[in-house]
Amino acid sequence: MLTGKRILLGVCGSIAVYKAADWARELRRAGAEVTVIMTASAARFVTPLTFAALSGRPVHTEMFSAVGAELIPHINLAREHDLLLIGPATAQTIARLAQGQADDLLASVALAARIPIIICPAMNSNMYLHSATQENLQRLAGFGYRLVEPDCGQMACQEEGPGRLPDWPVVREEVLTALSRQDLAGHRVMVTAGPTHEPLDPIRFLGNRSSGRMGFALAVTARRRGAKVFLISGPSSLPDPPGVTTIRVSTAAEMAAEVLARAEGCDVVVKAAAVSDFRPAHNADTKIKKTGAELSLDLTANPDILKTLGDRKGDSSSLPILVGFAAETGDMIDEGWRKLHDKNLDLLAFNDVSAKDAGFAAETNRIIILDRNGGEEKLPLSSKELTAERIWNRVVKLLDN
Image 1 (cartoon, rainbow, N blue to C red):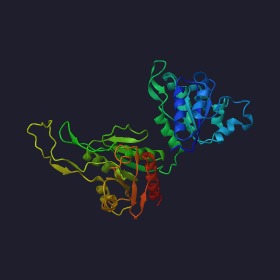
Image 2: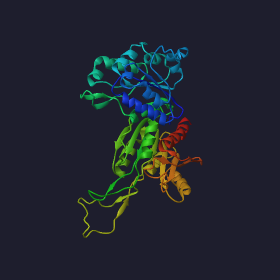
Image 3: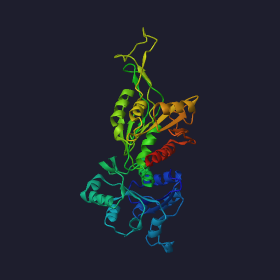
Image 4: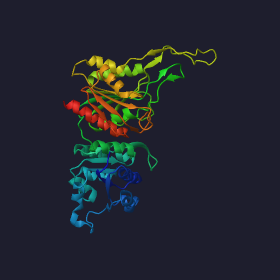
């Protein structure tokens, strides 16, 4: 997702600087070109040599270095990169930026930059909550800088509260959002994810092996592209994605109620959840014992949420674009076309869940997309995030039309 992107990493003097070293490594591992600027106080915590080794590039520390002075680094560094990420951002650097000062290299580069700037504050809780720091942060937000909320927890000074530098997954999401096309801005998107659990008794349930990874990837990537996203998830161990309104449910009936209540307010509905087709006809109030237990289990059909939405939609163009998912084995193409037409879908994505690299809980996916106009597209094996991006590319075309 970051291959070929040129990231300028600004590091300030904080005990949290060790996390920024990890960020440099993660960015480079993801394919980005990383150039590091360190303030004088940052270099007292970790040497520039550390960041040079992790980034594979020279580290910039001085405003008027004798080496490369003819390149005017405080101007050209801003010109040559796609994004400026400052973290840990100390109270001192935040104050510098808020006042438009240019008394060190990092502040000068930020002042000259016409690229997205992300600020990740890290400091003592009292310093962070002080009205001066909060006013400075508001001023930076007014400049168009993107602010990442600090984590809460115990500090190196043993105090508890907000001010901890966020972990890389949170910051990564902001970086990807800043670099993404905002072609879903202004649209409301609903995504369903994960399995459903249909209770048999207080201990047992009927379910499936869905992890929710594909649905969560769709929600995350839609949010990156500017959408207001509602994620309705069945039982999943995945954490709630940042910036996404997440509603947790358990059964198919609960998921149906949430989806049908919100669908008409959305522009796109993507049903990526693996909803159980059946539930036990009777849910025992107490644990069913082995002794004397019946060996047969009566089942009843769950509501088909996607077909209900398709029937509501009919031929209307004012209701949401409907995207369905199908986990298949065997004769997938014919079954895919049947589902697309039977459920009145705009797009249907399906995959062979018997494949080890594209089934439940896998990190990758290989899907085929069918559309209502007869189109068929086979996507190559790729990460579920990249697969989601390609699906949104198709959805954006439908929205544009």
